[in-house]
Length: 127
Image 1 (tube, helix red, strand yellow):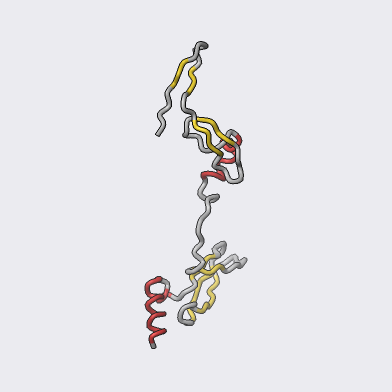
Image 2 (image 1 turned 135 degrees about the vertical axis):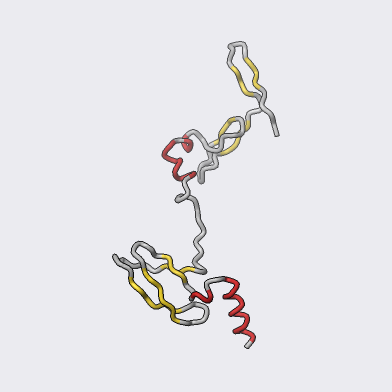
């Protein structure tokens, strides 16, 4: 790693030696940054309006596990019970639909666990 050395000019101004040139880490920004290596974003993307987009959890990409869950869009104001079919064994099971909740299990209580689901499918294919 390059260690910076500060040099004092004739004017008394401290200049940094070994400055690094790199591009801004913000997506689709190709602006070059000249600095000591700690800067990650250009002057525009260091502003407060970009902070939420860069560092806040709700803006970060999160993987949605749609393999184990199903999304049921509804506009119920109160809790409603609904019958669903297990995607693994086809057994009917009851789900309670809650207001403002849209993510529900796709499998019955016996096959919620991935290991149990795999074992059931192996046994089913052998027979």
